[in-house]
Picture 1 (cartoon, rainbow, N blue to C red):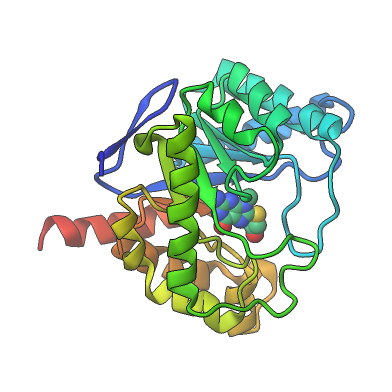
Picture 2 (tube, rainbow, N blue to C red):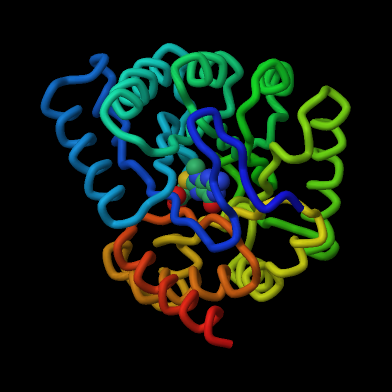
Amino acid sequence: MLNQLNCPSSILDLSTPHVMGILNVTPDSFSDGGKFTHFEHALKQVQQMIDAGASIIDIGGESTRPGAADVSESDELARVIPILKAIKQNFDVLVSIDTSKAVVMKAAIDNGADIINDVRALQNEGCLDVVANSTVPVCLMHMQGLPRTMQNKPSYDDVIEDIIDFFEQRIQACLAIGIARERLIVDPGFGFGKTLSQNFKLLANLSKFTKLACPILAGISRKSMIGNLLNRDVEQRLAGSLSAAILAAQQGVHIIRVHDVEETVDALKVLNAVAENK
Ligand code: 8Y7
């Protein structure tokens, strides 16, 4: 595996794990094209995440939470593109755009996005083409089913092997259309069509995904697998999220997608100090 990710605005060195900070753009924050107050708030949040050590800011204009409704192309563009432009104008940070729509991917790439983060792994119409006609890296996430129904009886022969097979197929589809392997990131998609025990089986076996020879991304922060295990509301999941982040990084995950950047960066520094002094 190439130990770096070549993004349009800079190179990400993958020899130590990085934090991807989730930018909280609430569903109607930007539906007016970006109200000043909402914008200011979002940019302040970005500054804080950068100061806390985030390498990547992930912006999503579509809710992919279990049961979430679909968002129109125009609404998603109106939410994502203005804030993307503002971040690229004001900060020196990598920006990933969480979208499954080819039109949004194209607009994001044209406006400076560094990474496309697709929970549907470029399976929607036109997505492979848009990414093939660019140079950006792309995160291929695994999901069983669709957000509205994905938590209805998820089922696998073997959750690890089935997801590895899925990635092998998606990697082949990318290579066939001319997206170089060096541009691909894989993500098992915690919580996306997985039971509690399947999610923990994934967490226990993340190191098996290193055989795909692509950088690995994992998003566990504040998810139901933490909440259900601990019986904690969403604001009380920090300790569980940090534990999961460390377990992931220890197994070779390169990018950890989180809400709590400062705390996760601290936890990873402890892990790095241990690795450096082994
Ligand atoms: C993930 C994600 C979400 C994840 C990647 C949430 C957009 C749900 N989760 N993208 N997106 N991986 N790559 O709770 O696990 O943050 S949304």
